[in-house]
Image 1 (cartoon, rainbow, N blue to C red):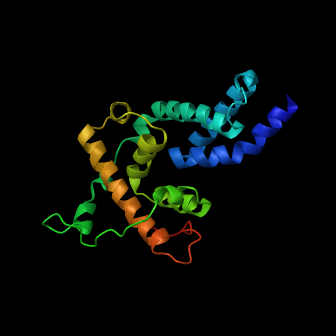
Image 2 (cartoon, rainbow, N blue to C red):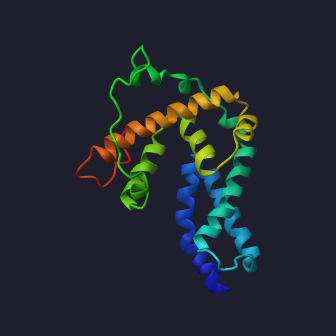
Image 3 (tube, rainbow, N blue to C red):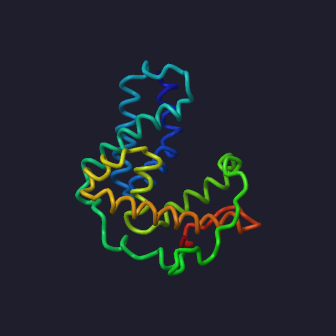
Length: 193
């Protein structure tokens, strides 16, 4: 048992980083990670060993993050800053790209590269306002659209517009900081996407 607790403690910083990316609130992230570790310690027999301990803990953490979002949804309501018209910057009046996106090659290959994942995380962290939070809820926490809309009091149209803008910004950020960057390692935390 002490070895199990020690293994949990070793994974704590990674879980906290994951939670902070999802929630963008240190105290909520800390609460979610604490609840995750407590759940794991209360039921160590639930870990069957069929997956890595980290994978099992992230599965628990995802549920705790959703619980945090539900508890704090009023503070997470969408803001008007998300309504900025990014489309005008990226598309001409006739609907064509102002700058045609470049071919990225094999995206699956990029996902296997640790440096790419760091750049992707930095790009997500730099999404404005609610865009990053909504993107994380939909794509990483895999919440359904109707659940996100209900929890954050958004219309489906508003949600899809913000997700569209988040994806466009991510594309732009990845293009700038990964695909066009021959020296690559990663984007500095102070850079803007």
